[in-house]
Image (cartoon, rainbow over all chains, first blue to last red; front, side, top):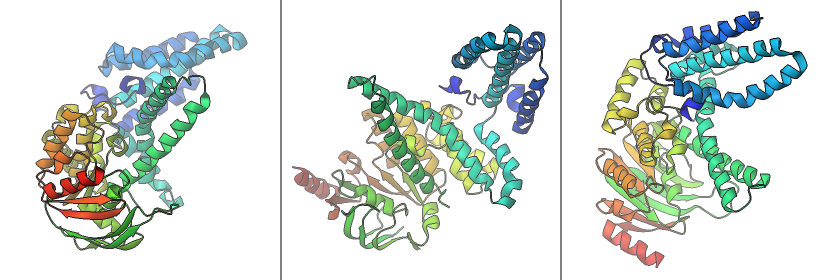
Length: 201
Length: 227
């Protein structure tokens, strides 16, 4: 789960040592620059640049493969659809650019602690205080969203097992209702835990 | 720290039956156990102590604070550990979760990092500092939840069935850790051996405090109630 989600991996590589602001700026530049990628050759160079970051971050190939594999569920159908409607050339560019951007984004999260990323977001939100936005609250919401991904995956796994045990594999209701009930219970508990840890204002 | 509960009853919003009825007790012992059947009011009692639940009637004072009026001050002094550590762990990695409460209290980054290292070492979690919290074992998760609370140095620690979801080995690990804590502890539990050497044990039954005494007497009365 850790690899698939691209969560932080401890390390001392040059990318780990780079400040979170620099990495997020780099990611933003890559995103903006991606609109200039126009040919399959440029796309190949863009993807290669994204891949080159992984040895620099000293991330094992296994982690990279684990991370890229789930992307196939999105990229392959997208590629098939695009080939039918816009042809090979544009498909390679479109799919390649998405792949390269995901690679760059993942290397940022793999080499940066969540708290450091959130600190940047909190700092960016600070000017919004004048229109009533609480930057710490935005940071906390992001934290919780990241934390809830594995929690929800675990809950979904448990509910699916219970569904199977009762022979209700094909019933969407037998999956959705207990999942929602448990997620709401978990949200209540998390609220209490936040209050208990001083986040009650 | 003196905990003074006077004339407390509580009914949760949207419910008709009380969760707690007419509780009057003063506690200042170092180790206080709370036992009773499911639905007897133990957890509500525990939640009163750090202001997570404000009583519908009566008063709860912890030290010099009234939990209804000074909730924030109370929660700075009273740490709370829940049954399910997954509900309590807020941050993605172990070290970040311990640092979470510290940064909220305005501790400078360097001081917070030093405290995190110290706490993780103390609870044997230092090797997992940068690991994803959700990948720890159940016992390690409960230790992390405990470490995250203790990092903020509460004077009183309230634990609501911290070993209920754990196997024997993990329960023992958590019990040994709790036994060694310097803090005053209020422990709600179904594991009666955990309160065997406590100073005082309260027994709840059907929302009322029905007995308050030594561990031997209290456990005996609890067993009789459950017979």
